[in-house]
Image 1 (cartoon, rainbow, N blue to C red):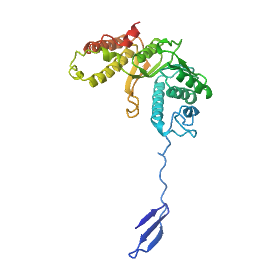
Image 2 (tube, rainbow, N blue to C red; image 1 turned 135 degrees about the vertical axis):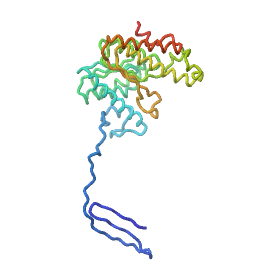
Image 3 (tube, one colour; image 1 turned 60 degrees about the vertical axis):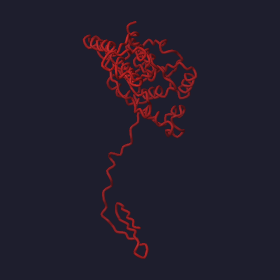
Image 4 (cartoon, rainbow, N blue to C red; image 1 turned 90 degrees about the vertical axis):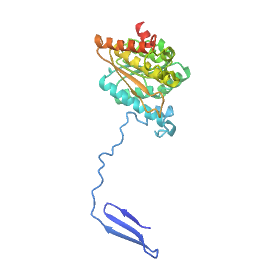
Length: 305
């Protein structure tokens, strides 16, 4: 039944005596300096939550507050932009970059990329979202037009049929199975300076695997073979990008608490023609194919055509 209140310039003591009678005392104290607030900085976001298109896509409410059901998507968008910002520090885009987002879906990340490049970096990007589903394409185009996002458009076409005249950045997030390889091949053939892929549904290698190395006893278990096939598919993709002169990284895109498809491959154009390094990457691909009994990786086939 006692309480103490400490303020900057005084202390107030509330207590009760043995008979239960309340007492309130106050005493002055030497004024203490206020707390150091220099570290209490608001987190710098690469995307303004007040952006009206976020409300149209169902990420925020009309006040710009992120909806509870969209918290994971909001984290994913911001993590994605942090990765893009890092890549652009290493390989800046031209003032009017040509960008393709293959398998754009509802366009959350496509809109975010366009907004970031235009409003944060002052570029004049032309971003094309490639998506097979016409209803999603119509919705995204209406949203872009409603918010006056000139330079952002969506096309209902297959990834393999989209062949731009110029491509500075290629994005392929969660394109299913070999659609990722089709997108990567387009980026390589068009000499894209930056390639970003988050692969999904690794089926092609899994069907072909006939493991002939020391891992064979382990991979008799289906779940382990499936996971090995995913690692192998994306590892070979990274090596094939290196064989084309790209500097690659493979890492966790965002925690698997938010999405199970959380591996990302990034590639920045380097010096093509470094024959020894590129040859070494292809030799590693050959060794992996031999050890796991793989006839051919689909991206390898596309690059050889």
